[in-house]
Image (cartoon, rainbow, N blue to C red; front, side):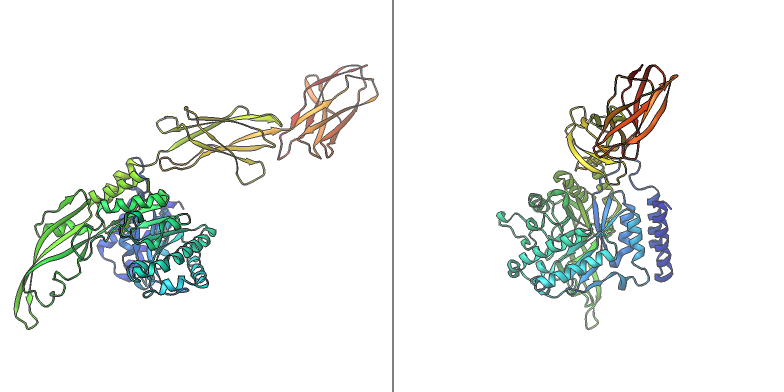
Length: 601
């Protein structure tokens, strides 16, 4: 069964279970069926494939919606973060998914993600009370237990890694605790990284924004990007929630870029992902009249902002006749509208109030602006909180940017000047690297690898750099029959490439010291040695008779120094033409010495 069929089977199973056990709506069923359509013809498939710059969270409470979005946009998505776990103690990591989806085994969405080719890096949040996690990290023995608990979770479920979203340090513990917690946090990250990497798993860290400490601007420095940068594989920056208590942009572009500039100065750019918001906020800024008791607490200038998902923003504005305005500095949209609330007071009297509300959100233009930061700073991509909240125009705008910055494919071809070479002689291997439009790639670092006959592992032997014609030529001295290939590594601008493999046959070199003459009927010897020196190589003497080589005498084998001596008797006078033949084996090809003549008198 091919990969496409496996994904389709998983999606059908997912739909079937939701239909039987959770009374899935027609809309949800249709959405999941769209996943199958996307698998047959992914978005953008008729064009050059985009760079996979979109990642995002898949919460336990909206798995179907978020998973549908991920698969529908699979041409953009390389990895996803199921938002499924929370840490309760050093040894207890609670599963949030199963209680929320009792009839849908975790293996089903996991199967869809894996068969869609996604790396699966679930998120663990801090589910402890104030300062509890900070206290746990302060003890080395407890850190070890935590590390083991996390690694066991990852390995047991065959996850590709883990994402830590420990926000309690920033938003609960208080900044007075940061100086004490920071070094323990760094130690924990280093210890967890070592344990995960020993299992070939990834470590992702999600944090609020930080800024250059020399700028004197508030940032959550406890997370210490500079210290953890060498050991983590992903840094996901929550570049949203800029405005919460008062109306304003969700994550203004200029604020994001200021944090990003600091991030790339201390963390390898390819590890960095910036957040995009799939939600908007809606604040009450003024109330006239007396609101009904049923909404009085919520319809107040002191109340928390309401939230809405991006895909509903246009309808919200249209319903109240509002005209959204795009702010280029913030790269966000806002609109103001009035909403009337009718009802009764707590005593049952009819009443009414009018609330002036201000909404901010990120639309397709906002997503494109953030995607362009990926190109500007060569970072890993953008991360959506959460997948499935966006409208289709947003992901399409990301796709257009991603196609414009997609890495170039490189084709690599390799040739050798001879397919068989005698031991001790050089063989010249030439590689040519070019883009799909035939443009040569100059200055490209090329790695040359060999795999000796009978061995399974490739060994890297040297590096070279292509010239202006995109070519590289290297001489090789091979000790046995060997396969050769050339590789170039992936960079931000280019995909990795691997040339075809070419097997170069190596034959033994045979040095001989034959006599120039011999008497009829008397035994004479032909001494010699083979290179490389090797014991047990079978050799035989051949004579040219009527145009064909025929073996004469008895074969011998070499001694520990590679030396041999062949003895033969000739019974007729004349001039004979001879050669010595070495047998081939797995390591070396059979070979012949140079032809020599002996006068028999």
